[in-house]
Length: 211
Length: 93
Image (cartoon, rainbow over all chains, first blue to last red):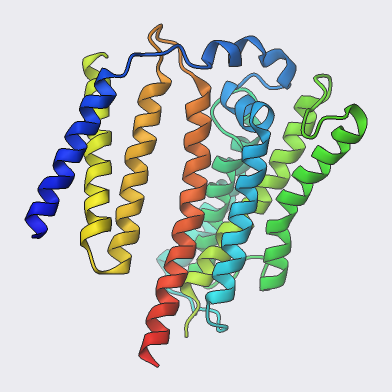
């Protein structure tokens, strides 16, 4: 039975592949995204899509991270986990690597406006550094669950706040005026970096709390 | 499609199929969650292939969709793991 179902899935995959190969190539939205980029305040087209053309998507994505972190925290046991990596090597590695990780996260956040990088890359790196401290027993801030959630909410609030402010100024939610769009995007991304990193840290803590 | 695009498409479809198989055929929740992750990786690879247009220029929209997708996948996986742990400890009581 299992083999039959497996063969079925293999056939479905083959049909999918044939359909994809047969699909005619379309020009897509690349040309349009590039021709309007001057109005977005950034020169990296991916950042322009994320924070300008499709800013709604990114706002709701921050909401998804916040909701997942809160829900996982609600499901987790109350006791925080003990350190899982002991010994001088782990401690020294955490002490040596963390400053570099934080610096690199700041660089990725800043470079995102003109080259590959941005809030998500910076936040995953920052969260990695925080988790490294967490597993070696040097519990990083924010320590309490409430503060971690509050920081995770900060990204959403900053994004919403900027959206509402530009709506009050020019009538369209999240439509950044071209003259200050670059600064607005950097502000949103800075708050989003802290928010997503806190959300990921909260998810990690919820997953490792001991029953 | 160029041979490289064909190879990427084939790998993407294979990942999607393998993940779908694990999701449907495994009885263990953790394997199902991993299967869904592998399926997602297939979809992301496919979006990256489609981002390269016929003129060789890269379309930034699929790239932005992929990075959004990765973040949502991480959040959903974390929540899924928390749910699996909770159901496991609840069924022990």
